Length: 346
Image (cartoon, rainbow, N blue to C red; front, top):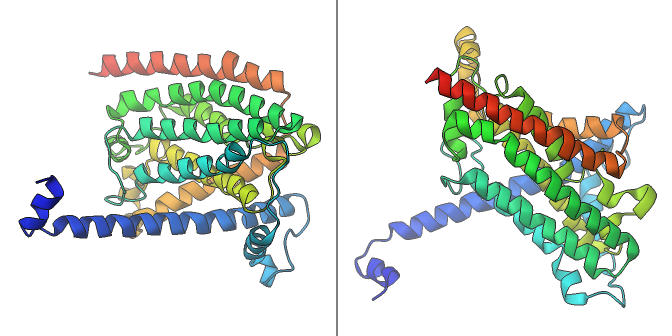
């Protein structure tokens, strides 16, 4: 008799309720995330439009608020074109990998106290693993399309991800040292032990390294070399159309949300506010934690838009030099200093 049969025969049905509750949480998280993805595209076009003294989308719905729905319908009904010389099985599966990897990352993100799908003790390592897996979809697309543009985009992306994942991982080591845990909920709680309520102040250098690496990990301006329109037309997904193209587009914006959430959890105190601020203004304690969390995430997503509108694209050799010669040494120096300070304070 296996474990499931034993539970059924003993009449214990708690596991059924637990499974149903987990499924509901997964559906809520994915549904809300995809809604954010839809309107992140709209707000990006609006924000950059106003920065460039224009209006952005205005025609579909009041002030263009239905533009994401129109875009979704357009991509859904567009013809799915597969190049004759493409490696068809790999070409078809490549866009699915980054979407599943980024959506799987949501499982360990605590959006507020007690609300996390999988509260595992190695949450940060799990996020690194999923971000590495997402890069395979880009490399596979570059290879399978059998196009020089997409192949160059795939090569650039693989080199870029390898370089900046090292810097990103090292930037979070200081957070691990101060919190003594890889569990994301524990990292948030550890920040409440300090009067400033966040690791942003003692880990400012690590935060800077993480932010730059996050831009590179998500292939966003000024590190969008894998899809440089001026050189590679669209890079690794140049041969994709319809819903397969939409999957890459969605994966990029889900990745932005994931990276923003990691920054908020590891450096900005997650769903909490600094204890000093809470004591000074007691009314702030009544604000739900999810409001603080989303507000901080929205700020970081706005940074993506702001940088895209103001900073030009890096040259590729400068991109590699920044990762290996600047960010990684800074992250290593931060680890050494954090370790010394931690050791002397004990």
